[in-house]
Image 1 (cartoon, rainbow, N blue to C red):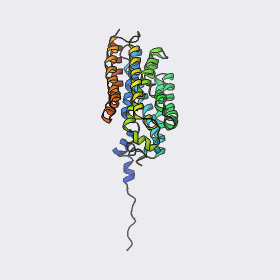
Image 2: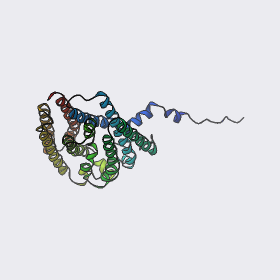
Image 3: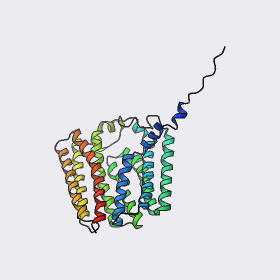
Image 4: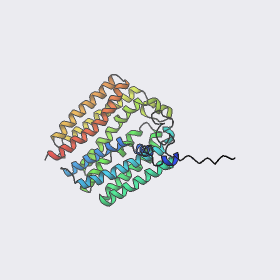
Length: 305
């Protein structure tokens, strides 16, 4: 008697709606990066308002910013899938791991950015929408697809994309571009290289294996650490210069000074002795530094007038 036909396993269908799939799509957006960018956008809003901004406006900017940032990161997963396959830290990501198809990551990223643009254009300001879209295109096409693969200066130039959120926050409140917003852009722009170079010291061999010309791959670690120290000094100097403008008050200046001294001290310690623990400490502190700097800016914006 012939055996009954074997039915196809329903597991793939079930996986389409599983928690695991939702977790993989969430991973495409890189939530920690999204949160940090939203903090900087909120800082721009508080500075522009010189008070607590409208809750509705903050929610709309946060929604649009989160969707755009998450979408840009999903596009990064799609474009970097060949590099991710060769790096130990990234080969288990959803796309190189085979859990999400490249076209699905691409579609997801495009859809998130379309919705983000609509939210910002319709309910915030057309310039905020345009700047956000420009940041996504710059990050995906200029940084990820070109600079990252071709020059050790990739992160210096590419940092412009991550410096846009506080400008978007400012524009959402004021409707225009003004000098304080450019100060915030410059601060994040100068923060980006020492942050990523500290990470690249930890991932030097991964980047070498993937053929990505990050600074410690194309030059010595000693030269990389020197660049980190010099950019850290420039960053802290910029934050202190901003503190002497009329846009902010003594709460910001004091906070920037304390946070900056710690940043320089950690960069100096790394310069004196280049070790993985010190590079990791500086990398992790750089994340905390930016979040706290903009948190202090928000507190200052509420109380300094």
